[in-house]
Image (tube, rainbow, N blue to C red; front, side, top):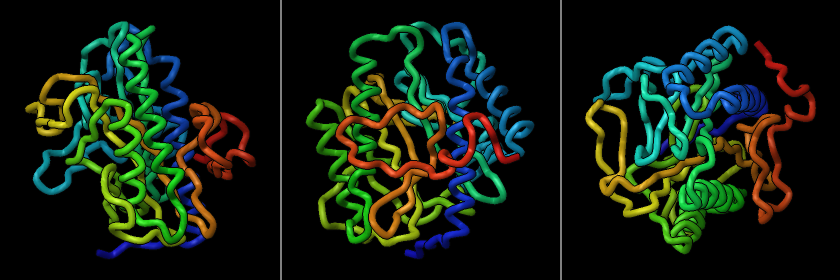
Length: 284
């Protein structure tokens, strides 16, 4: 396995791309309401990335081996859809939950992030699933520091989610990221402490747990991309891109509109550009 360590200049490029990805989600947030279609959300994101940010939406025409080119600029996964949902003309309804997954390419660097949205009020169960999934992601992030192993991250996420009564999707995982959309290492969201690769400064990867309200089993929807739960239970996902620093971690995919970190997170280091760039200003 070859893991590409990033230099200080590389990390600066990733900070910019990461913040831009998060700002796309900030822009979309007020539009996520009953009646809008995911295709309309995709158009908003596409135009914002190209015209305002001067970037490129990485999912558009992305075609890993064995896949047809992905036809849209973002992924929108609704209710029982686990990941890679393709935007279409389906209007969001009150009570839906939807994951919006954004990756912006800026100056060759990829900023990859996703958030859950509850459309309208939402049920108690749906809100709880989204909140526990967010906290599970942060349980994993909090483990990141030099000397820790990837298995420690996965274990922290798995224990937290399963203790809450939910299940972890195992077929998809986080990944290294940089000039390439997907690099080594793979970052599992389950595992045993003290196993897998050791973290060292300069590693950049995503943590993006997919957590189901029912069983963990999944299947392909039939469009070549969308993954759904086999038992049709709700599924949620959150994603941040993280860099391992000399003393811990820095979250690269944050912006002015990012949700607050959970209370259990101690001294989070967030994208340092936020201290220097006014809210809403991009670097196109």
